Amino acid sequence: MADIHIVREHTLGLAQARKLAFRWAEVAEEKAGLECTYEEGKTSDLVRFERPGASGTLEVTKDRFTLDAQLGLLLGMFKGRIESEIVENLDALLAQKEPLKAFEHGLAVHEAKKAAKHPAKKAAAKKK
Image 1 (cartoon, rainbow, N blue to C red):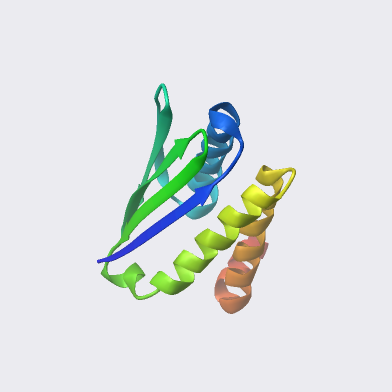
Image 2: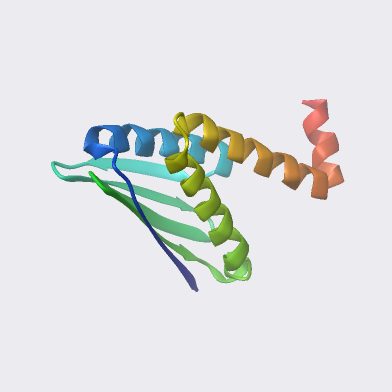
């Protein structure tokens, strides 16, 4: 198993960070096939996510996002790539004035790159 641990500090406060994390979970379910549960707390929230071969949590506080993920054997071989994409998307989220649009844009770019690498999937997507 491969582990990923990412910490990003922010100045959003809990209410704004909560909104961002909740939307992150929605998009992650839709675009990455993750099954997410959101647990709201008094001083922090916890997003649990999983899919075959991966599971983890995103802890949300007033000043920090902490993502911990465990990758199974197959996905573990791509740990570096997966981790760099998570970091890139999280940093884009926190840097933008409209972070949700940046996150969704990052996912759209990722999906386009994936489709370009796999012509059969690209052709199937066009038929839909």
